[in-house]
Length: 421
Length: 160
Image 1: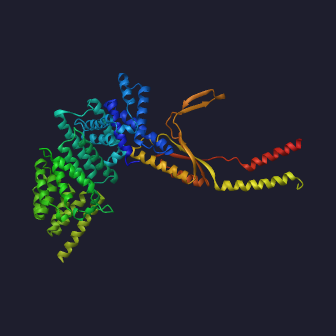
Image 2: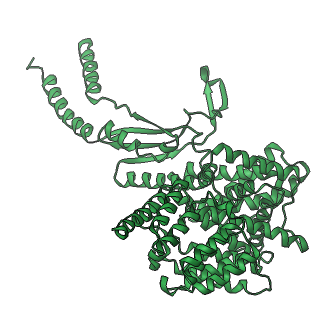
Image 3: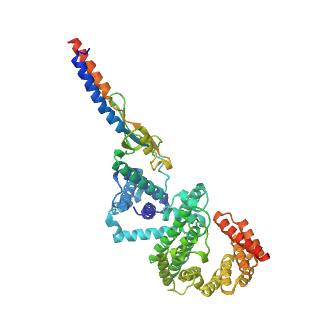
């Protein structure tokens, strides 16, 4: 069986069934799909795994839905229409090639994407709902990814479904003027999903990696669809691919964090980089420049460098300067300071940090002190480096980060002793 | 006593049979693994379900290949319950979700109960709350059966 087949089939079936039942029956669609998967568990171990598992699951979901609809009279006057639709739904191998159904599935997914990412649903509920319905994750898995309890996630999901019902959020792909702003919302949620997986914070490692993969998969689906096929969608997909491609190099075999300088670039995923570059090319089609474009461009600079020394830091700094024009958040400014230091030296880096607008927002951000410590160290200001690394250590609770910072601290202390002696 | 040809013969026959019985019983006994509980799999995520399906299938195939499992089947959730004298009552059931409901079984042919338990321990559903019951299949004891036949024969002789 293909990896994640159940998860992906579940997501696909939920979106198709929701299209048939109506968005107010989202939960019903989810239950039918879950029951089909449970039935597979109860029979496949004995009868063997079907040649076409997806078709088996589709057929089972269809039969279950028909049974329930007829027995429980769930849809009143809509029933004949729904039954007719289910009846003509092909579930054999030909289904995947049937053009009508291919469109149905593709549209269903996009509709569900736009519904889950509706601006009236709170952001954290949007991401939870997207993970549940669009990616087929379970409540426990989502809880792990967000470092929260299963109960909290279950509550978010219930609220999101309730909001969809109460506000009668339509199950459709927006058109015209509305499309642009709604697409922004979808991209924003995918970006958050990706970041949740990408950031080197704690949480289940495997699930985090899958979050990145899922955000990319959904982004690619969006980019393929006429309604989502826009430069900024490509920019987002490019940014995700070009960053995710370098994930394997970020830690060594023991899970220790490696600096960009120390990373083994041969472990970068070249196929993903190639795909990312293609999307980056597509993203240049229009006039609009979004933060996604610039971040993708920065990632592309790193990907293009065969070693650390050949990194085009001037280009990266240029991109950061333009990014600051669109997003002058302190975190972006801190990242820019690293580029400044690489181009103009550590002293300029420190000045760039000191010049950060609203820099006080970073006061409890460990990375601020880690970056400063690094700059001071390069200037042979070992005592200042030690102070900064100590401060950074106090502010992170993650073992991997603590370990990394301890090493930087120890190194500075040794050099300090030597310089004093 | 020795003059009783029947007795001599029977002792020989018994011993012979006994060896055969010993042989079969030391090599193979039959056990049922009953998979209980019809709720544990409800809350699993698609990813977990896929993993359990694959593992369970591989487990079953391996046991069959190793000659340790003669077969197995899943059971439908719903059936009929027949009770009362002459089966007067026929009801639908059992419907209830319960920890006791049997969802399927394996028929094992292994050395002893420890081996059967060891196999039960490998059930991929255990991690999620499935329960496996190991039940030895009762053997019809050949020695006892033969003895009963003989004594029946003697009774028949005496009464002749």
